[in-house]
Every structure is written in structure tokens, then in C-alpha cells.
Length: 451
Ligand code: HAM
Figure 1 (cartoon, rainbow, N blue to C red):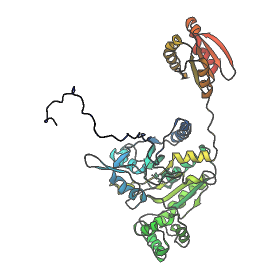
Figure 2 (tube, rainbow, N blue to C red; figure 1 turned 45 degrees about the horizontal axis):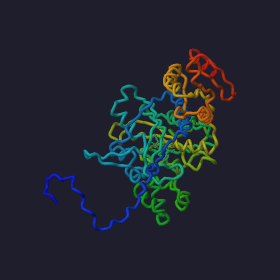
Figure 3 (tube, rainbow, N blue to C red; figure 1 turned 180 degrees about the vertical axis):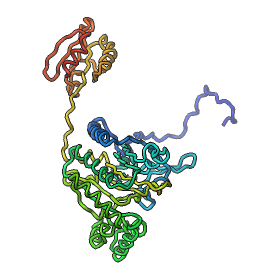
Figure 4 (cartoon, rainbow, N blue to C red; figure 1 turned 90 degrees about the vertical axis):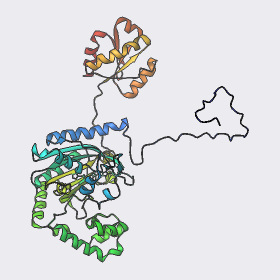
């Protein structure tokens, strides 16, 4: 070895290898895939997503909801305090990370706590004490991926924050989600309703519930044995056969509500009756997040589409603001899972409304005409006409083939002759007719045919 810092003479021949080297194995680079439970939304899927956004867009206008967006990452304490430390979402499903500065953050598993934090931080109550907000954003839960359950999924959330604990807004929130499902074309919609009381009536009910389940402690599944200690209300929504059977003899919260909660729930149901929205009372509906009080609800569909589970759910959360460190503030809201809405629409064979194709397909023949194409696209864009093309292809027939595949009705063909004569062939692909028109009349002629 030359001593350190001695430049190596690269002109010297390398020493001949004396030992035989093993033939190098060809290692094929592993193809990368998306993380488990996280899905790409490919171009073919977007018409479904656009439909959901379009229907929701009309609803938010009608109900005067304002859009809000919050960071994907929040301090982990927000979720611990808001959603609750004993919940599956916080205990098992959160994606947490430590920043270089030592802060512990988590990817949002749900939207409500972040919106409540933003409401407080920006004093939205100063603008108006009642804020009707909506959100359309991705959420993250490290759950076992299966049908209707991803690790990254999108929610449409609606939050009505502030004012008083008025049952009117519980009913309006439910109405908004009912409208969303109906307007998307879903049928056999099932709405389940329950009330999980308040600080006055819940402790005594939970004691009664514990008493019932302690008598059957040995029959409980592993999860429920844990829940009996940490979150007894959730014993009611266990899907294990043995635990479902134990629910039979459990006390029903609706019979144990205090008079204020009882009157509140009766009023919510009265509004739903007035709106002719059918519902089922379901005492096993307790929801998986700690911030709920009084009204809780969940939408699903029966028959095709039911395999994805609940399409939307929510309820009142009058204690959330206190849990995250503010004065009490009544609020109610809900969220729908977009992937589940789309899966249910497909299961029910909902068809998307046909949209008139407003594109024209640009075709060139020869280099001289290709040179002009960017300028032509620009001219069409300025006139509000959308353009599709496959200009890397050379032959007329292969470009026409793409136009056919794309389902575009009009093709604009520029050959050498047309470029020289400053004209264009407008071809109607559905009727197989064509006409040559002067370039200066191209926009007018295209608009006439697209009408
Ligand atoms: P959530 O019931 O946990 O409520 O979620 C709402 C909806 O998100 C569900 O009904 C479902 O459609 C969808 N969803 C939940 N988890 C997944 C998943 N792993 N994969 C696919 N879709 C999923 C909440 O998140 C509350 N923040 C709702 C709320 C708003 N309550 C009051 N305001």
C-alpha cells in the first residue's frame, strides 16, 4: 500500500488477479410497488372520483359549507387527546414519526380533531360562532388491508362547530350524508342511529354494562377482555360471534339516557321523521372514537355494496374541544370514505352520467405540419377547445386509430398540402365525413360541430 496521501499512479498496470472469481450472479432489481394498503388512483378511476367531487360540490353550495384543509401531520397529542388513547385508531393504527427536532408527529387518522384544532388556533368563532366546514382529504390508519379497508383512504368530512347543542344540526349533518349517497345513485341505503349519552348518564350506564360483561368475562374474545378494562362501551360493537351473542342481555343505553339526552335524541329523530329519512335504532352502534356524545349514526347499503362496510359515519362531539384544551364547544359532524362510496357504486352497477366529449383530436402528416402543431394547440386552447393528440406517431392511420380508441368525435388533419394552403381537414369520426376549411375559419367551424 502506498503511504496515505501519496497519489496513486493510474498509468501503472493493475496486478493480475491470481485467484479465480466466482461468476457474478445477475441480480434483477426488484420492481417497486406502492406501500401495502395504499393505492394509486389511475386515470381510468378519475371519472368516479370526479363524480363524487361533483355531487359533493353541489351539496356544499346548497348547505353553505366552507372548505377547510389541515396538515397531514399533527402533533401526536392531538389524536391522543381527541380520538382517545384507549381507541384502536390511536393505540394500534397510527403512523407516528419523530422529527429531527425531536417532535413526535402522526399522520392524521381522521379529520375532525385537526379541524377543531384549526378552529381554535385561528379563532374562527370570531368570524361566526357557528362554522359549517367540509374537507376532502386523505387519512392514514395502519390497519390490516382488506375489502373496503386501506391504510391510506380519502374522506369527505362535514363538521358543524360552535353554536349550541342543537338537534337541528345533528339532523342536518345526517341529511347531508343521506343526500350524498342518494345523489351518487346508491340504493338500499341503511341509516343506523343511537345515542351514547353525556357525562351525566354515561358513567352509570357503563357501570351497568361492565356488570353484565363481567358475569361473562370468560366468554369474551381477547380484544373484548382488553376493552372491558379500557373502553367498555366498545364491547357492544364487537363482531365476534360469541361477543355478539352476549350483547343480547346487555342493558340498552336508550333506556338509561338522562332526560336532557333523551329529549335531544327524540328531537333528532323527529327531524328525520319530518324529512322522511328512514332509520334503524341500533344499540350496538357506539363508534370507535372517544370524542362522541349523544347522537351517533352510520350509513351503509344492504345487498350489493354492503361488503365494504360503513360508507359514512359520525355524530355529536360536544366534549372534543375541552379534550384538546379549550372551553366547551358543541359540535356535530360525519365523514364518508370515498373509496368505499366508489366501490359500492360499482357493486350496485351505478353508471356515470355520460359527458359530451368536447375534445378534438389533432393529426399531422409530415414534419412541416408537426412544426405548426404547438401553435395550433395554443389557438384552440385560447378558444376554450380541448385537444387530444398522439403527435409522436407518424402515420395518419396510427393517429386515427388512437383517436378512435379515445372516442373523440372530431379530428383535425394537417397534411403538407393543408399547411401549404393554410387549411385544415375537419373529419367527423362518428359519421366518417370530412370537409376542408380555411385555417382562419377553423375555430368557428369546430365550435359549430361541437355544439
Ligand atoms: P370513521 O367512522 O372512523 O369516522 O370514518 C368515516 C368513514 O371513513 C367510514 O364510514 C368509512 O367509510 C371510511 N373509512 C374509515 N376507515 C377506513 C379505511 N381503513 N379504509 C377505507 N375507508 C375507511 C371518522 O373518521 C370521524 N372523524 C367522522 C366524524 C366527523 N365524526 C364527526 N365528524
